[in-house]
Length: 371
Image (cartoon, rainbow, N blue to C red):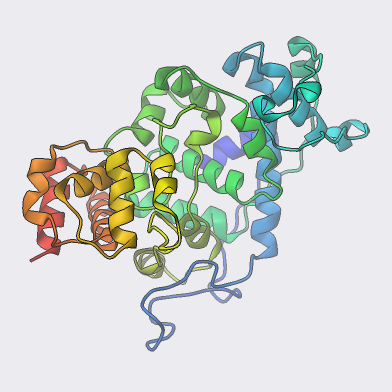
């Protein structure tokens, strides 16, 4: 089942499929301005109404999909807290007033004791109501759909990867972050349990879902997602952490596939992991494990990276865990940004050739970057 068929089935209707015009406002290409800054900042153009309308419709489709499978992907203890948010999200469909929580999008364990009153929602009745929802048909005549098709084509992405990118974009472009709040209530004990839940939501085999996040995670390496299955606590939103690069490359109307790839490779990395010099050192240790925290501190203080720092960065970016000794020749000769851009380029080039991103390929790219 391709993406368009899946979207159609999820929305319970037929979609509209048309070609986008490259003359639409917001189009960019590698030849548009020869004097432009080679480092492009994300969000260079205002959001287009067609993209916003599509994302809003798809958010409702995703929320309904979560609701229909909620009793199967979460515990009976956490079910009511996610269900009440989904119920209120669709309150206008049922003609019911929305019960505003004391503190919206705050997990139960962070609420004061007097506000931890578990709502009573019967799973079978809840699923029945979700099944009666009639949602608007997503209009696929927008840049997001076409650009996602182009990404899938040029990088030889699988259907599961394509759906992960679409859902990640939808989750991260919604304000207020209602879907993310619901996902944060759905916790997992381990990765296999999480992949089983994602398999239901994405309508893909568990093995294909696992490939999206296991090493080598090329979607993360290309800086399209920032999802890490080793986050703790492991919640559903851990698998839908987006980047501003993903939002930018999907929303901008590109003249060509080459223009899209050019923009993706030139987008600034200031949004990502590059540490801010104003962040206290102890804050890095609260966010990351020691080796990663030390890499951030060294970068923030303009100090050279050690082999252990480089090994941790490679693991964080693509999932490969290699001994620090293999990076000794690179120590002091490569910086934070170069590591990110090198891995991004390696993943993009090998994906275009439909080649696996192997450990050897990553190591060769890093060593070539310092020559």
